[in-house]
Length: 159
Image 1 (spheres, rainbow, N blue to C red):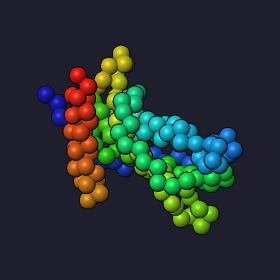
Image 2 (spheres, one colour):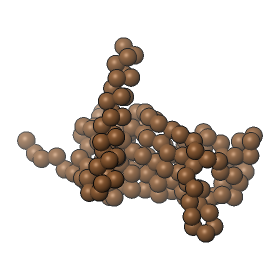
Image 3 (tube, rainbow, N blue to C red):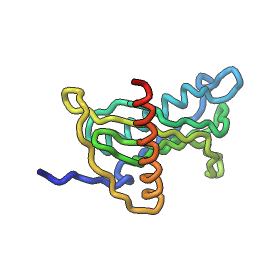
Image 4 (cartoon, rainbow, N blue to C red):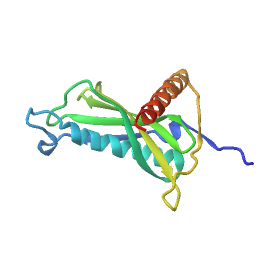
C-alpha cells in the first residue's frame, strides 16, 4: 500500500479581488449576498482543485456568516485556504473583506465549504492529506474535525 501524499495549506491558498459595480448591489445599496456566495464558491473551488489536483464539486456550504456590508466602488478581497481534509473531501474556509484605500481590511464574511474531489469518471477520489505547520493550522483542523462530525450527524438525521 502506498503512502498518502500530503500538501501544505499554503500551496493551495487563493485570493480573488473584485471592485463592486452597480450590478453587484441589491435594493438596499449593499453587495448582493448571492453574488458574494458565487464568488466564495469559485474561490473554494480553486483552492480545492489546487489541493487535490482534480476537478471538484461543492458538497456543502457549512457555515456562511455575514458580518458587514460592502457598497459600490469598494474593493472586495476573498481569501481561501484548506482547513481540513477527509478521504475524498476538503473543507475550505473563505474569508471576505472590504479592502480600504489605505490597505486595511474589514471582514465582511466567513464561510466554510465542503468540496469533493472527482476522478475522470466524476466519482469521488482520494485527496492529499494536509500538513499542519502552524498553531492556526492545528486549531482550524481541530475545529474542522468538530464541523465534520456535526455534518455527519445532520446527514444521519435526514434518513
